[in-house]
Amino acid sequence: MRAHLGDHLVIESPATGVTRRDGEIVGLHHDDGTPPYDVRWSDTDDVTLVFPGPDAHVRHVEHRAPRTTHESYQPNDTGAAKAVSATAPPAGRPTPGDIGRRVADERHRQRISREETARRARMAPGYLKYLEERPADPSLATLIRLADALGTTVTALRGGDIDLPPGQGYALLRPQLRDLSPEECRALLSTHGVGRIAVSAPDGRPAVVPVNYDVVDDAIVFRTEPDSTPAAAVGSEVAFEVDHMDEALSQGWSVLAVGPASVVTEPDAVRRLTEHAHTTPWAGGERAMWVAIRPTHLTGRRITPAGG
Image 1 (tube, one colour):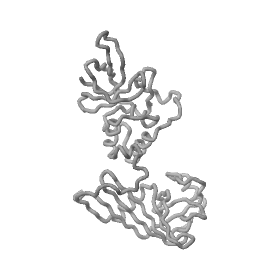
Image 2 (cartoon, rainbow, N blue to C red):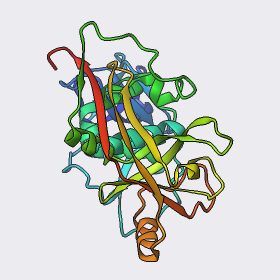
Image 3 (cartoon, rainbow, N blue to C red):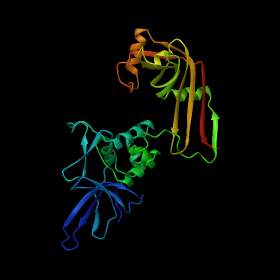
Image 4 (tube, rainbow, N blue to C red):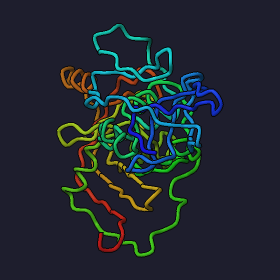
């Protein structure tokens, strides 16, 4: 038995030959199209891992060119996938589940297209779109393939490690720790995201606070409130740190920037920063005070496998 994505698996009654159940094959586990398959059943719209028995056969369908990003996936009345033109009225605001959000976020972070991710995971792009945009409970086999395609873990996609501190995995057998050049540090800083600023708090105690930041004209910028701990950075030399750790591969990098911090007061500059900010502060609120750190000293380190 061999199948392609989009074919239908049909289960028939051995006695009467009448179809008892059918569903669309939305995931392959072998490149040659042999079982098992991930099947979206037409009667329940559930996706399960199926090892076909002697009462099953594949109904092949005509395979069109891969769907473009201008098409969306929706289950029709029989549970089969159908492509809907982007010009059609939307079927409702997408309400992704936690797994779908994590898959989409990781895919966007790595700048991998949906089509490429689906190809790596051996599943239909339409089914991946469905997972990313609707509350879904994919099978363990599907999660394993998605985790492998994205270089992460099933636990991470399920959010099981969300409350665990990073760095609890095993160290590499032969790790290599090397210093990063200032150019490498600038390149890693420019990815923006969340970093940590070290300041002397108003009560005189040292404090390290995470902030959402961007890099504009070689300056690290973030917004805060005038009476907040991060605002204590203004008028002094501060340290700003950003890092990334790959738990699955036990490797990562960190960058430390040191320099004076000041308030951005020029109205056009404030407006430009606000309009082009990549992210809004996770802590919420107005946070209209922009602070800029101009690094005078950049250092960084990276851990990789020896020889890597």
